[in-house]
Amino acid sequence: MENLFRLVDHEDFFARRCVWVNGPVIVGAGPSGLATAACLREQGVPFVVLERAECIASLWQKRTYDRLKLHLPKQFCQLPKMEFPQDFPEYPSRRQFIDYLESYARRFEISPNFNECVQLARYDETCGLWRIRTVQARGSSRSEIEYICRWLVVATGENAECVMPEIDGLAEFEGEVIHACDYKSGEKFVGKRVLVVGCGNSGMEMSLDLCNHNAEPSMVVRSSVHVMPREVLGKSTFELAVFLMKWLPLWLVDKILLILAWLVLGGIGKYGLKRPSMGPMELKNERGKTPVLDVGALKKIRSGEIKVVPGIKRFSRGHVVELVNGVKLDVDSVVLATGYKSNVPSWLQESEFFSKNGYPKSQFPNGWKGNAGLYAVGFTRRGLSGASSDAMRIAQDIGKVWKVETRQKQRATACHRRCISQF
Image (cartoon, rainbow, N blue to C red; front, side, top):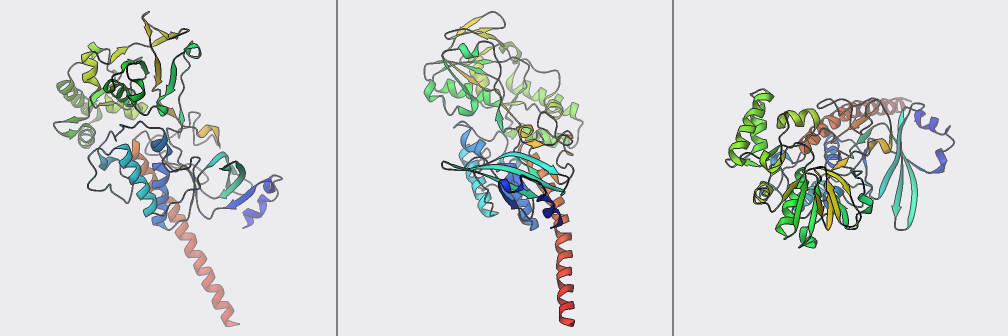
């Protein structure tokens, strides 16, 4: 309470409604935030979850395409303390994953504060507490709230904001330009010439979806990319890699994976898909770049139904795009499958733990805990399994302190009662 009284010295303390949180504040109600909340619930630690959207897992609910499925087997994607239903397929669909997350939130009684966007979070050294300012939108009304707590868990993740590339002349292009977050289905692009900028898992799968809806996709491949089969002899490629890494050095695992990829997919360089010099697992560990798991796009590339083109030099007025090799294409629409980024630097006033790109400075497995009660979950570049690992560590770390302090308070209360009874 002494720390709380010190807050009154700040002149803006009474300018907004203040809420004391007797536990951590979790920013973000995606899978990472839900996993952390569930683990804290198991530890008996109270918490508040803040979410800027009006639903949990807004990325999955609002910014993913209809045909999306989990790229990895479900056992690598389930959150702590709750498995996927047994009747779910090996690779659950987008809708099934959302249903799983909603069931998860109900089971662990997680009720986020929706429509509440964090504007600023900073550590107040005067009182030794975190101060999180938010704007809450309800209908046409907006109100400011300041949360005060000992622990802050950053769970906004790696995909909080769209990456919009700066391409010369893009503003002059007269066709439709959308980011992948607004792409739902190729149904609206029937018969159209569509340029897909990006060749990651999303770019590949959107190109396949466009092809299946009788569009004419061209996919921009600016740099090298690892394309791997999703399965080898009925086994998940990722599952195989995880198994091999338990026994073999990383360089040897990569050699084996590339040989298997060549046996299953054949050579892909002649189609404009050049492999990086670094192996697929090493590249993921070092730079966080995920290999593309083929779900059918490569067959369409081989047949010419999906055209692979090099980087873009500029867009011209009308519907023309000039490539770096001098070739000009006429296209009707552009889909920017250029990925996402962290938005942490826009609201967290802190520079010791997080770097300027919005990721913890320490890499996995040491990037989950900072100083002064600051934590990060979902920044491992290791997908849902990495987020789950962080969530369990964070809950155990906070729970340990919480339980010690709770026992001390209980003993102090009991002693106080005995003293009263003796007088």
